[in-house]
Amino acid sequence: MQKIPAKEGWLWVKQGFALFRKQPAEISTLFLCYSFLMLITGVIPVLGQLLPLILMPVFSMAFMQACAQIEKGQRVYPKLLLVGFRSPARNALLKLGLLYLLAATVVVAISRLVDGGIFWQAMMGGGLSGAEMAAGTGSMTIAMVVAAVLYVPALMALWYAAPLIMWQQMPLSKALFYSFFAVKRAGSAFLLFALSWFALTLAIMTLISLLMGLIVGSVTAVMFVLLPISIILTVIMYCSFYATYTAVFGKPGNSAP
Image (tube, rainbow, N blue to C red; front, side, top):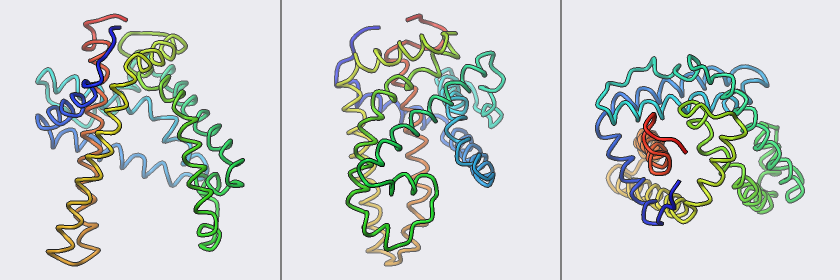
């Protein structure tokens, strides 16, 4: 693994847009199918709140594989959503999903020390009144920041773990180790990557909101336009995740760590 210069972070964003432009309808359909499945699982009591995190590594590989196929000029179909379940690495990916859940639960639980559990209750779907939410807004914001900071080391270990498990047949522990130090080595690039996506998303959403507000003057119309834009930006962001992988580990099947 070579050290990645900071400027690479912006290139990852651009590569995400480039991949999306090759098959925008196909990969957007894949994302909508994924969203629909998550909507269905959400109606399951208790388990519906846990499954999205547990299944995240499995489904994330559908988008990684889709990007790999787009890069090769191959067509992407909705059935690709199940590629992780059909992989010999399925069980390891599900174990990784449990680690996603564990890491998220631990950091949100620790945040209870900051706001007395308001953020925890909000995440767990607890019944908070409007007055309680308003009164705890300040402390909950601090709790969210604390949780985000605490989650960074876990995110570093989890970032590349799924593709390393599936594409490079690494055991779970080794994939977590390689992922953590790969992100650490490319820290400045990832910082620019995150800042670029934050600034880009904020600028696009703000500009569209202002323009729609001036032209239509309807909050409903603005939200109607912002929803598909937010979906498109999310899909492009998923494409850029693939770019971060190939920059560090090379194209799938063509390199070893």
